[in-house]
Amino acid sequence: MERSSLNSLSVYRKSLALRDLSEAIAQYFSYNREKLSIRQIDNFRNDISKSLMIDASLITKEVEQAALSNSYSVRMKSLTFINIMTRNILAYCNGLEKDGVKEKEYLNLLRREIKGFRSSFKKWRKSFNNGND
Image (cartoon, rainbow, N blue to C red; front, side):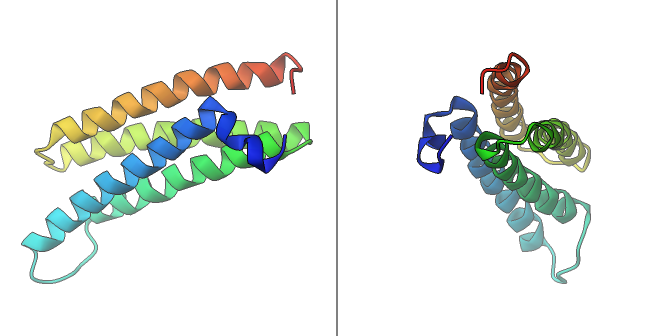
């Protein structure tokens, strides 16, 4: 697959949407907390927000790597890594909720985005198992 045809992949487009939504939510929650604090110290919510942005960004990079690679082992490593990152993002949603985030509709929106991405991802992953490269 060529880089130019990545946008035709549903899983890639969904990874971009997930990345953008994760970044917006993470920035909102980090900004919201820092606005209330006089001192700028790292706290639990900021740590989760940073991890959320990083992991969502890594998902997109791993989708690119798996799609563009001719190596079966590279693809499988990327697919495994993506699985881990999606579970992490769901855990971050739970962590933010337990940290007292009142805007649960944002977390539920992110959970729905993850669910849509995972559905697309599972279909895409099966195409590798069937030898349809």
